[in-house]
Image (cartoon, rainbow, N blue to C red):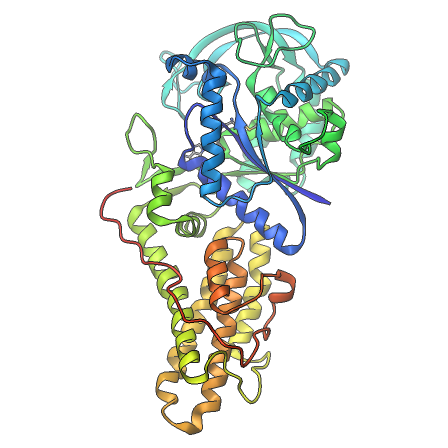
Length: 511
Ligand code: MSP
């Protein structure tokens, strides 16, 4: 069974921001975890390039929309390479094959009687590309997400008959695990209980979009087209753009990971569209929280956005991954604090994990020329074996549940236990008495073995650091199912000279 995992398809109105980096790092961690378990994964990311917002952005810069999209989407693509993201696909909704998939999908929905003429009036946020039901201030309405004025719209165009899907959607969203976390499911349930209304899927005055077949002058509403990008992305590079072929490559998706602001589109509109087209809805949707900075909402107008490239350059991908995924419960809102980033990275990665590996390797080399070979290998009842067993058992289920902060804590705890064990046994004193040599060998072997398992269990979350750690222990390429067990380390094997796993972070200026 293919595991299709997606990030949102990011708007190309601007270069990547910290929100898009956050979602993408999370999906990357999950995709790596699934692959390590041996699952077949298609990890999709990409760009959402049509609609009024993009058209306006390009116009403001005095360039053609396509030219603008080419530029920004190439920045996204190279940005994900810089972050070491392991996506299998990068879909652009301006890809000609996508247009064909959208047309085929629309024809199915239309043939099913779900496209009607309608009229919609209301306040619209161009940044969200969405009508707002209940603007906070009816006199001077604004979008609370983008902190900008809404625009009044009165449009007659094509509508999708969402109202026909009230019952199936109610049934779908009440399924266990369809919407996670649970608080978000409740939010969507309240919305659906209010009664689903048909929604407009075309625009008459918008050249920058895919034309609606059979309805001259209409282009697709950007969300109708964008969601279908998840299906187009499944096409193999040489496939003809055939909807059924795309579906056969890996639909339904196992999970859409998105921010909470776009939950309705993914958990309500999109599944209903799929049902109408006779396609299975996605299997699950996870809506994560929003990031703030030092307690404040981030925004260009506030001048407090974080430039992800700068963050990457100063801290490195491992540090940012660790901080964002270890410190914030995935699903909850989170606050980015520079001092906390430094503290966690330096304490957890440089001190706890880095020093553990470094000093244990150094001692093992000095006294035993490599991995010590105690007269009896540590058995499964060794205190560190018991601690490792707990982490081996728990971390995968936490990864599976997208509880990345708990997976991180499981592994960190293991490193803390190993450090504690070293302090207790103090091999640096014990070795002075030749009678203790065998006991010291057994202790160091156990600590090295624990360090190895720290490296193994960290692989989805911190792929680079994990790789460096395992290289330090001279391990073969990682095979999770083989390596995730106690006692795999080859006694007597030599070890390369230790190098620091991670440089301590020092940041004088604000990021
Ligand atoms: N183009 C649509 C998605 C279409 S999917 C078929 C879109 N793009 S976006 O670029 O505006 O947003 C991408 C993601 O970034 C969303 O999941 C959104 O929740 C997330 N974030 C935007 N600001 C954020 C924070 N401050 N914090 C965390 N995530 C945030 O929406």
